[in-house]
Image (cartoon, rainbow, N blue to C red; front, top):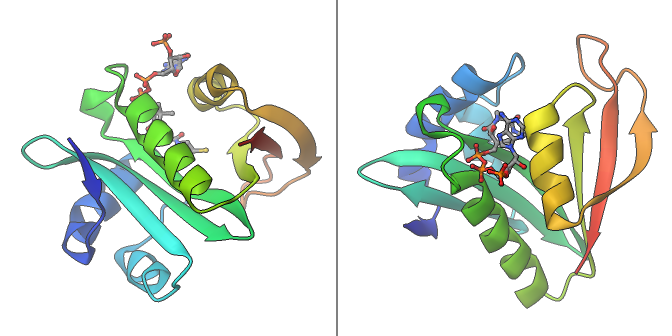
Length: 140
Ligand SMILES: CC(C)(COP(=O)(O)OP(=O)(O)OC[C@H]1O[C@@H](n2cnc3c(N)ncnc32)[C@H](O)[C@@H]1OP(=O)(O)O)[C@@H](O)C(=O)NCCC(=O)NCCS
């Protein structure tokens, strides 16, 4: 079930962040994101949070974060979350949905390409370990 991301979910989300990224968002960073009126998030809840997506809508929209619990990947959860985020961006009147992804992140790139995202730019050494980011956009 996809539902709204509540502040009470932040601890479970921070755990999945740590399991998924070398530079995870901390619980404090997640709390801060809720202070922005432009931030909206959704979670997949199946007896607990199994995945989440955070989106910032201000003119254009941007996927701020998305991940699925490592034990529940390849079961369609990422697709359902991204579907919800795209629908939200559309409902909000945004024309473009942007995101950044590590050049080496093949699972995420495959997910985004499947949705019709197109790579439009490279941000060299964008991440703290020196890896490039690919900027992608979906016209909605
Ligand atoms: C990227 C991520 C969110 C995908 O979530 P998921 O629930 O596993 O994705 P789905 O099961 O909905 O898969 C959808 C598509 O993504 C692609 N994909 C997912 N996992 C993949 C993998 N390990 N290798 C290659 N492609 C993959 C496939 O195209 C897949 O379609 P298919 O099942 O028809 O082949 C998940 O791998 C994840 O949490 N990764 C770590 C966090 C991360 O990198 N987030 C993105 C930051 S930019």
